[in-house]
Image (cartoon, rainbow over all chains, first blue to last red; front, side):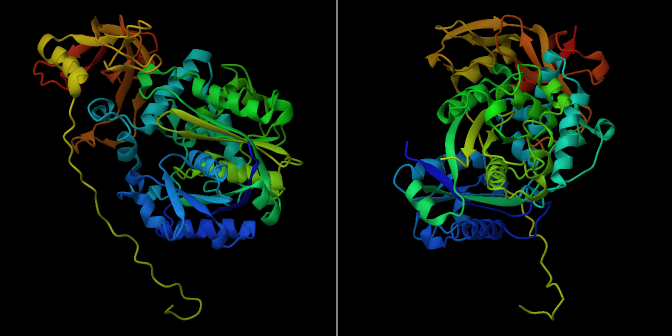
Length: 379
Length: 158
């Protein structure tokens, strides 16, 4: 495989009800990524936008951001999945003849109705008519996972406490909080066992990442971050058919990404990880799927403190998705944060000496798909 | 841009609208057989994979892992065990009808006897202390049935 690098990243601040229109968010993230890379729009050979028609309330929603994403006169395409999957397509493009590819994702979840939109992800003649949506489906998964392995609500709450605290050091984060396990436990129930502080916020925002082949990266980037391994994997559509207590799709994606990157011992070889914690219990499940611990041991791992900022493998120093959940953008934001960490540009949330990072994106209800990235300062 | 220094120009806050797109979804032969079973016989039919033997509920044409076409039908339930549940407390508007679903209500996935996958429906108990994974439940059919998921009114604890 020809070597490819990430040479620029740009993000808006994530917040509730941003007042700009989606194209203005896309333009802000795109310009920041170009500035970061020391590039002009003319240096970009191809563009991948990430959007979803239901969230945007617009048919062929990618077309409306074409000018703001610099698509004019270029080969531009679209991925209607989480941004980590859009990035996968962007990487494929630079490995297929384009020197550079810009990937940009946007989301204004504040403009639509997330419960109606996520309900519409289900079969119209089955679960949709029974009112299932992302929150209730995730509550079912949380219940199944916690029951099977004896994971407690307090252990899940520790994820929320850690990530909201980490977010205090991230100027892009939406919900930085100094909270306790008790605060999480006392917060109102949405769908048990999920409570308000176990759930991610609804955040508007955009994120852009620029990929380049080795020759273009060497010419232009200040500090290229190299793609060492990446893989994604899909599980069954219907929740009643999946083992919701353990993600075989994540295990498979991680195994293949690790193999490409030469990772045999994540604890020794990965310095920092950014994972898609849409709900607190998810981070524990993803520890297990990523091989950070054995099945059912996620609760014990968070209790050990090893994934905290002072631990051996800090997870979500950015505050994670619990602190800023811009749907479709959040997986790309995990990659952007990994890049900032590896460049030593993560400010007060910097993991000292980070050289190899993991970023994970998910797609679909209860994470039907997973995408795992390993990026490194070392070529 | 208009406005003196230090003054923030007014933003016109929101342009409100709604996308209302009516659909008529075909049920196809598999859903149709399932719904006819509910409507005409108060029975729950599933499909069985000729390759791996897995019994799928709701029934469908393709076994995903085997990529094999299923054409054997088997009856499952009407009893089974709770595989997962949640008591929903966040107020919710049913997008299919526009009517509010009164909270709390309980979503369950039930592993029906004889099936290898689980069926999602409602449970008529909203006190989470009285519900547990593994409890046995039975489908309650409506008197008036029209060939939809709602021909099962809900599941009840046995």
